[in-house]
Image (cartoon, rainbow, N blue to C red; front, side):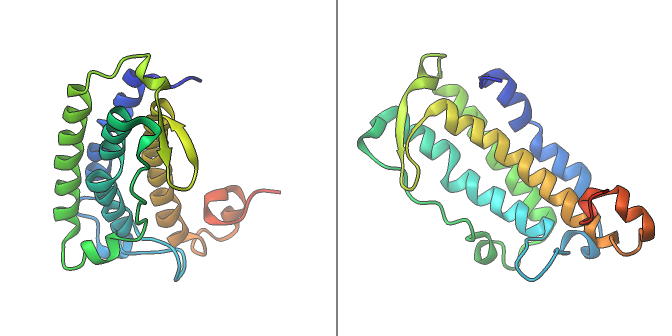
Length: 177
């Protein structure tokens, strides 16, 4: 499937509501749970999404449209949420994410991105040349990946409790033979 800005916006605009509906008012046993010492909790993931809204997607879009391959994107710190979220409640994070996402989608709309713009190239600091279409498709896939990650982390909290049914539930860590 080729990237469609309208289809991508349909996902990007709904992610905050999905997360709010899913995570709001859940106990910490769900929202602070991780799979292991090196994994992220749903709380951490929301913080990561906020950091992306502040420093990644729309800023890189604007750099690409303004400078093309003449200026590389600023490297993204994938772990900045741990410090930035410290002391904040999940409610605060969910509200901040919703506000930032709405503002960024308004900014994206104001850029008047055309079908031709999706082929314009920018420079990723690690990956090299990328197109605007690839950047925007990644923004959408990034949201979906983290929604799936939240489901997996939460599901694995009941991996042992599911007993023998675990064999039928790949997200619990044991795929059916």
